[in-house]
Image 1 (cartoon, rainbow, N blue to C red):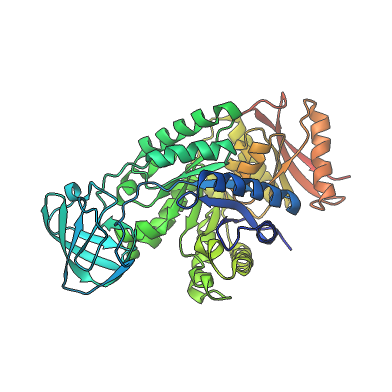
Image 2 (cartoon, helix red, strand yellow):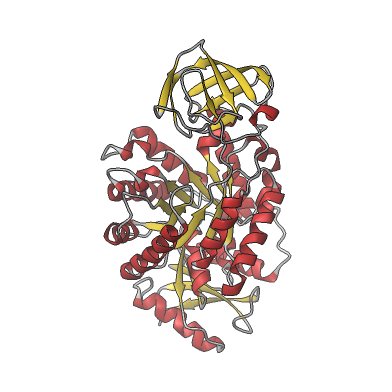
Length: 477
C-alpha cells in the first residue's frame, strides 16, 4: 500500500491502551501518538510512553510522542448529583467562593478569577458552547447569569467567554510538573494549551529545555490555537514555536463556528510559509466514536485539511475512548490517500518572489525543483537536525522525500513532517560511504530500482548541523 504524505496523530486512551492495539494503529498509519496530560498520573504517562516505543519497535517504524499539556482549568466545580438540567430563562450563579457541591441554582468554580473578568452583558459558553448564559450582575465572588440556551451541565465542564478575554495563564503549576514528566521519557513534541502570545511559548520552551538538559534533548513546541486572543498574534506565536495545532473545539466556542474554516485555512497557509508544521484537530471523525463508518461531512473535512496542506490530521476521543479505534485510523488513512491523489501543487509559484539567503535552504529548494522536472523517484535529504527535510516538506510535490539521519531524536521528530519518511542511517564522516549507504537504503526498501533517478542533498563536512551544501542527481546502476 502506498505510504501517506499526510501524517496521522492518534490519542492514547482506554480504547487503545494495550500493546496489541497500539501496534495495530501504528501499522495502520499512525505517525504520532498523543499523550493527553489532562488525564492520568505521571507514572501512567511514563508507562504509556514505554509502551509506544515498544509497539513502534515491533511495527518496525519510529513514531513521535506528543505530550499534550492540560493548561488552565477554566471550569465549573462539581454538582451534588453529578449534573443539573438548566432551562432557558432561569437564573444560575457561578460562585468562586462556593465550597459545597452545586445544585439547580448555582455551582462553584475551579477558575477563581472569573468574577473579576466578566461584566454585565458578557456571554459565557459552557460545555463547548452547548449551554449559553448571559451575565446579569457580578456581586463579589458571585457571577449572576440568565440561561439563554439550556441543557445538561455536569461536573467540571469548561467555561469560555464569547470573544475571549479570560486571563488564565497558559502554564499552570501542574503543567510545569508534567513538563518534567514528559522530558523524563524525552517526548518529541510538547503541545501547549491556550497560549495567548509568543511569551507563553517562549516560557514553555525554556521550561522544557531546562527539564530535558540532562538528557541532551530538545522537544519541538506545538502551540494549540484555541483562544480568540491568540489570533492577532499568530505570526509571533508561530515564530516562537515549531508548529501549531488548529484546535477547533475551544477556538470555535470563542470565535464562533462559522469563523473557524477560514481561520483553519489561514493558519495552515501561515504555518507552511513560516516553515513550521501544522496539525488540524478536533472532531475530525467524531461519529466513529460510536459508529464503524464516518459521515460524508467528516470525509470532506479530513480531505479538505489535506488539500489545504496540513502536515497532520488528529484523532482524539475516536482512538482514546471510541469503539472503533483501528477502523477509524484505516478510514482516515484512506481519505488522506485519495485526497493526496487530487492534490495539485505549483512549485514554481511557491518560489516566485522568494529570496533564499541561506545555502542549505537554497540547496533544498533546488532539489525539489530538479526532482520534479526530471521525474525523479525520490528525494533523499541527509540531515542531522532535520531542517533540510522540513524546508522541502513545506512545498507540495508528488516526489516522496526520504530523510536520512544518524540521530534517533531527529528521526522521531521528522515523523510529523508532511511527505517525509525519516530513516535512521549509520553515521559516517566519509561522503562517498554515506552516499552509498543512502542508495542501499533506497534499494533495500524497494524505493528505487535499476535505472531510476533520484536527487540527494548532503553537507561537507559530513555531520555539521546547517551544513547542507551539495545537491547530487544519481541514477541507480
